[in-house]
Length: 239
Image 1 (cartoon, rainbow, N blue to C red):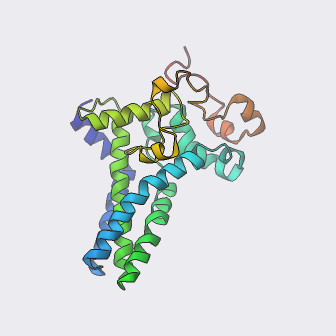
Image 2: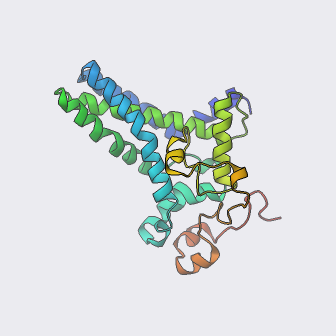
Image 3: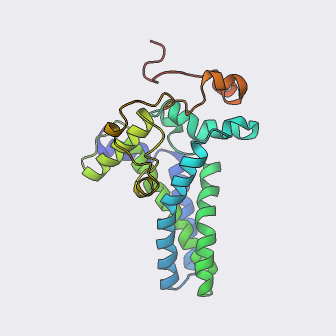
């Protein structure tokens, strides 16, 4: 895949179009009710800083938890937003998160912070919109890097190649680490950053996240939605 083909594929996803449209709306609201330069810059900076931490926390302790599939009301959500992605990491239809889960998360992570910062300068709406637009555009960047990591594109930039290497280890070697997408700072700080040479044994749950056939017998909600529990490497199933 060429870089041009990657870009074309990326902009065909409805989720990306939705993020860009919403960020344009947020910027429009900001221009209608702007905040001064200082709170705007602070809101943008804080949103950019907090975003990877929020992603790390959600990725590690929610998406990789083993409690969501036990709750009937959450089983379908967990299946769609992460189980299916790990079952077949290169399945493009589930590469991006579902909007009904990503948009509330982006809003919750950025709007209150932007509102609080803007309120100090009596411009809560402008601050909130600056932070929200930053969260949406950061998501677009995250998803573009995520495309690079999962599609048949070999990045030339060393830092992108390194990101892809770490993320592929998360999907194909050991899911218990390398939770970052564009930065592994929080992995390093929380002790979950690793190189494959440091973990010679492959995780037996790298593709099912612990939702094994035995677990499915007790908590069948995801299995019913999936038509069973797939086992083994996704590229070798059916051989």
